[in-house]
Image (cartoon, rainbow, N blue to C red; front, side):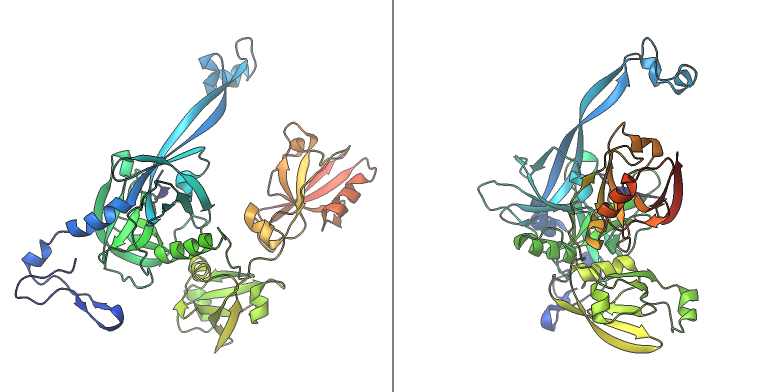
Amino acid sequence: MLLAFGCAEPSGRAGAEPAVVAQAAGDVQRVVPADAASIRLSFAPLVREAAPAVVSITTSRVTTTTRRNEPFFDDPFFRHFFGDLGPFGAPRQQTRRQSSLGSGVIVRSDGLIVTNHHVVDGADEITVILADRTEHPAELVGSDERSDLAFLRIATGRGLPAIPLGDSDRIEVGDLVLAIGNPFGIGQTVTSGIISARARATPGARSDVSFIQTDAAINPGNSGGALVSMDGELVGINTAIFTRGGGSIGIGFAIPANLVAARVIGIEHGVETARPWLGAAYKPIDTSLASALDLDRPQGVLIERVHPDGAAAKAGLRAGDVVTAVGGVEVFDAPGLNLRLQLQPLGSRVPLTVIRRGEALALDLPLESPPGDPEPPLRRLAGNQPLSGAVVAELSPAFNETIGLDPFTVGVGIVEVEPRSFVTRLRLQPGDVVAAVNGEPVRSVGALERLLGSQRQRWVISVERNGQVFDLTIG
């Protein structure tokens, strides 16, 4: 299986009871259609309301590749015997413009549009095509890879149709939904299905999102499009599918609308992608682990480590605790826990339900950003030493998140490697951590420069990569 990212009315009849009955506090009673007439009812009124707020997005960017003047230099067989150099093989730069397609949803009549991060990632130009076929240049307001959300703004001088944001926590498995988008670039298309599952984690995808699963057909180009409830509200942003050949097989995923709502509030307050940080390492609980912890059933996440400067430590969480709910909503895995935290604004507090040694506890978690400056000073190392040409920075939980490192990692990380510098011979790469030099631990850039500045004929540099430490001996 392949996880693929694209560029992803009340019924009744005369004289009969309505299929949807209004209840107190806005709740509805869901019932199966009672007869053939109910089944023949059309989604057309709902589509007429929602479709004008779903847009197509085209992006373009300029890419540069290095090619040889002679076409046979692209042949692996030829290069195996003759190498990359030769009298006819002078390299040349080739520049071309790449284009891609996706979808988006207008969530504010002033022109605020939500789409997927992967739809606009790396784009030089973004154009939004409205339902009336008019085209408008778009400004990127904010983009977040880990939640795969991006926000655009267009200026049209007029109010635009917008889809109201629904409460994605209230949807149920089996609810009817519509997916609206621009699959394969053929134009706006509507498909129908049901909610297949909630709180679904997608294997292999690094994400802070617990997805909605649907069997409504989602294909490449649908990414960023709308998942609409029968109330005409936006309940999800279509983003990915499981597929064998690139097309829909009825397993699609959407980002919950409640996360979109939280991001919109952040943008309105000038905070684009800041997210609360628990300050702990944790993992899901399976059957064997639940038995070892003496739990009645697999539930929650197990706290493995607690950062001394994080919110978890301030709330009183300890290693070995099991967090079963955040804000009264059950969690079962890391994406589910991350999502519940992201739905709360920074600076507030949220209750945690915790099991500690068989006893249930209620803890109050402050919602804070990870500690540390997210953009520490960068230092380019120079001189006659092995790491000459490396750009390094001191690590912190906040900075580690921006470069994809474990927030618990401390020391000095390599941010950039200057081409054709001495450090490239060591095959070091961005994200590597300099753990020690000649057996002495490195905790700061100053300490690293001091250790590298000593005159030596032989160096042993310990480097951490993906949780493993290896030694490089130079000299």
